[in-house]
Image (tube, rainbow over all chains, first blue to last red; front, side):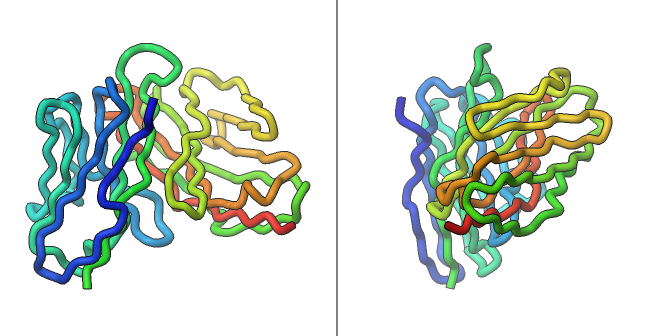
Length: 117
Length: 115
């Protein structure tokens, strides 16, 4: 079973540009999460999907951010009109909701490091 | 509101020493999960353990052990006979048992094991 994958691993962009990140969860994981991690901090929750439905969004997710999970498989996170404050590591995680030892455990991808110049 | 505090920002130990990483949490929920994750220099968060709030049994896995004390809202992590490969940032996290289960992380403890 492959783990969570994220692309690209690194993204450098100029302020004002739009960027899109992709996350492929572990197959059969119903839940998918996006987090943001800045230097020296723990990850902070951004949004959560159960299958294709986006069920929760953090107040950190401004209207410049949008996330989708079409067909309940991979997910994309888009940031429009990037700002320097958006520079961070964007982490994706997935978890199963079936019973078993992995229940409600989130497994993380390698992250996408965004640098906004 | 949930909150996780990891008061130790950085710890350095000499190889083979034991080290304990502290985690204190706050929550109004009566049932919740507690987690530890490891973040090596490569950056990927690696799951180490999940503990349910109603299971206060301590757990040992190889050189790792966890001490959960609900009375003091603490979930401490001990590495026995530390190794250089243990050098990483360690995060404690909390989530509700139901609903979105999104994780609330502490600020992490950077562990450096000196050979």
